[in-house]
Image (tube, rainbow, N blue to C red; front, top):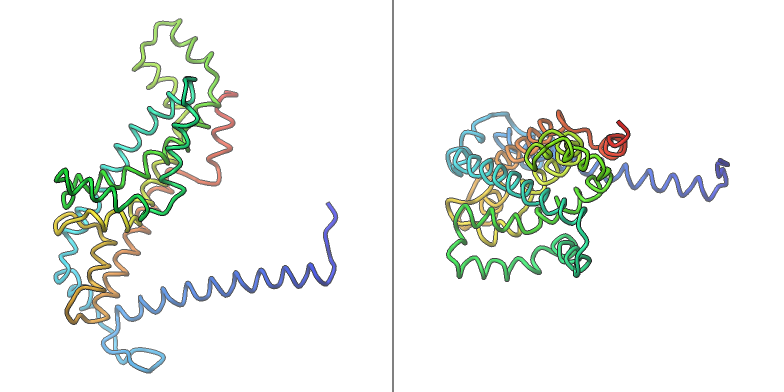
Amino acid sequence: MIRDTTLGSKLWAAAIWATVGFFVINLFAMIATVVTSSFATRWLGTWLPAGWTTRWYSSAWSEFQLWDVLIVTFQVIGAVVLISGTLGVTAAYALARRDFPGKRLLVLLFLLPLLIPSMTFGIPLATVLYRTGLAGTFWGVVAANLVPTVPFVILVMIPFIEQIDPKIEAAARVFGANTFKLFVYVLLPLLLPGILAALLLVLVRTIAMFELTFLVAGPTSQTLVVALYYAVFAAGVRAVQSIDAMAVIYMVTTLVWLIIALRFVNPTQIVTRAKQQPAH
């Protein structure tokens, strides 16, 4: 491969690196500002705060009832991951193994919640949930989050399932495996990289899902990102440091979930592992 060493290519590469560097520096600067503010006793017009304290974290914890919010957040994440994984993998298997009239149209419908902005279908969805009495409840929040996550699991899992030779399943049937044993002992080991990848992305998506959760959440069904929004924009006067402490708790919570998930799934190896499985 011949490397382009002209002046124009060098300037283009330098511009790209400068843009990336500017973005990264600004990102870390914003995070550092929020973290520093959350530990500051007072910070006005100086490079560093006048003093340091941790009392804003205890203040945010009690003022915003973060223990209850975190429990709701974890429960919503667990329910969405479990339900979307179950429905998504099942539907993906049917779409990958069966041909029927309207299949392409059905796949297109699954794509729509991922392609169009959340607010486009979020408001009609919230209207339906309010009319059915689910809005403002835990299961209403779960149902709203399932709208984009189930199609996402389906679209991620279809290629993994299609890479498995149907003859493997036929051989298992010949040796007497019923549907349950076929899934647990044959399909599940082969699909595990794809399932873990899909559920990892669903987990991250649910943590950050603001629009749909905001539209249907009630006082006792708010996730952490929605509670953070209300802390910033709700009426009344609140200490900036206390809100920043809440933002740090949100960032740390997201980071912990990512570390736990990445302990079991390496995204850079997902496609490679899926392609290697049928050859075993």
